[in-house]
Image (cartoon, rainbow, N blue to C red; front, top):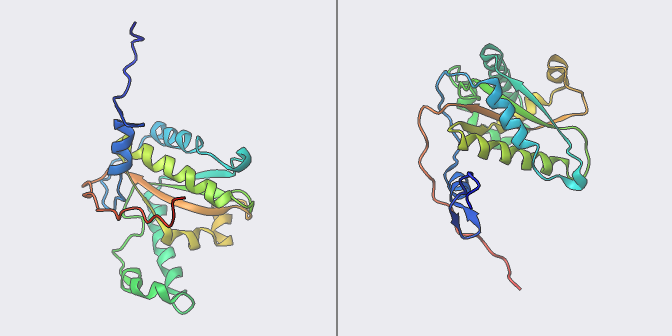
Length: 201
């Protein structure tokens, strides 16, 4: 007897739909100027909080910035701050030209930024927030949205003065700054290396 609910075709132990979302999601660095509706952002956040966490601690908190003027300001300030770190973090030197380029926006002109914060320094808080981030990015891809994790933004977002500007508690740590928007182009699939299996006993 039909329940009236369409069930996904199964491919092994994983639905075709989920399999395609996992395999086709890519980081997007080119966006249209179409805003992402609040209801869609809320849907992404509701997916994020379904992630597992150690002892069900749910150590995450979220901030959303959809003010493109503020995002541009934070991009410029982030670049300036990263340039000040070149002597301390030599690995950043290969990005020096990009940081000095006034046209380079570290948020790639996306219309929305979602920041996942760890509320505590508990042993597994950072990993838990990363699990929430993956849920969010996979859900976004399933909704034809693009995402990209902006690691360049983390040092700036964790500055005390920036947390004060955004009314973020000083103890909270920005873990995953993720831009969200509608892609101008969908990046092609990038070949992945086969799993490196150290042992199988």
